[in-house]
Image (cartoon, rainbow, N blue to C red; front, side, top):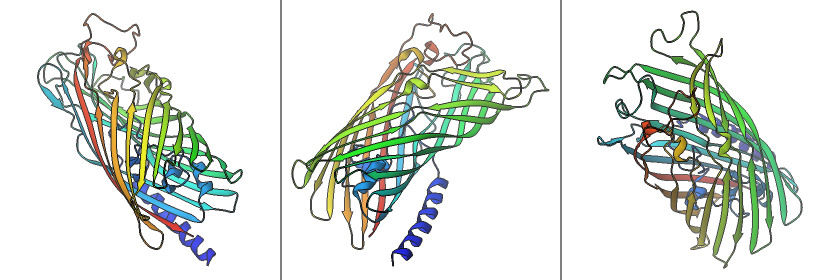
Amino acid sequence: MRTHVNKTYQHTLLALACGAAMLPLSQTVQASGFAVPELNITGLALSNALVANPDSLSAIAYNPAAMAFHEGMAIELGLLLVEPDLSVNTGSGTVDSEANDPVAIPAFTAFTQLNETWSLGLSVNAPFGLETEWPAGTYDSQYPPAATIPTQSKLEIVAFSPSVAYRINEKASVSGGVDYYWMREVIFNGDINAGMPGSNPGADLEGDGRGVGFNLGFMVDQGAWSFGGSYHSEANIPVEGRVDLPAGALPSFLSNRVDAELRLPWRLQVGVRHQAMNKLAIEFDVTRTGWSSFDKLVVDQDQLGTNIVTSINNWEDANAYRVGISYDLTQATQLRIGYTFDETPQDDQYFSPRIPDADRQLFSLGVGHTLSNGWTIDAGYMYVKFDDRSLDIDPSFVHAAPNESETNGTSAVNGDYESSVHLLGIGVKKRFM
């Protein structure tokens, strides 16, 4: 009987993982920078405060060490619908981003207990991504002639994270694994400001790439109190693509192939959870993201290394503070709420309309209901409110980097930026014993 279940589980795991990876992954940022921390529906409802939870199967996506506290095997599949609302007022009226349409983000997690000590798991999710698209003319009057005016920016990144957990004893476990990042698509389009309205030629860049990092985790369950932490390393993604420039921008003997490198930041999340009453549990987490690694993005022509685009970011490492509360309304139904304050890594000095970031607050709620035969249905909702951000940089300010082709953090990006995001998710879990 166990052999039959294992085969069924393995086939289902493969099919769902492949299916999740193929779903659309256009995203708007929900967390600082271009991070997307919502890894499943339970996490969505608890504002992603799950790293120290030994009871929930959904914690495995946030901390694979949680596998050691569960028996048998399980599969979890969720779908998040994201509706962003991003706009800017540059002084001549409010303009909405054309990437404000609802998008879908899939999430998949599975694990199996190999024996009383070892467990094996796999998560497929989208921890990073963004899309902004400013209509032509949004910044024409502000950017200097010959400068690149950002129009569309897009990142679609899928992470495949196989992990193994080891149970040290009844109270403690550790885990380790690989993070394989597949950048399905990167778009970095812009217009070259010709200084005359309606005559700006386009410069379109598109590519893809792959990179590898690692993850580590631990969890300690002391009964009423539990502690946990997970770490995902930095990862470099070499990007290969092509650029379409205005006629004559490149010599005829050069190809339009380009190279770049996107550096994904490391992430550290630690938390403590307290079972305050039989039905009530509270978790507090802190997430620190190493955004200082995202210092610049350089795009070079493939053959000679001729620079096409240089975008200086110089971001700072940033923290997010999370609280998640769960209440067992009945033996089968759990209510969930959460809150996060998330710091931006982007200061005014290098602000870019490609990623118009700001401090934000995340408010979430949801419910989980267990059915018969090991099935559970989860639903969640989150509202993300960005702080309004106004930039009024003196036109005389010029960066010291003469090779920067995108004028981040200058008067070219002045404006009043407003952002918010609605997220709605539904998921299912199936436990096999």
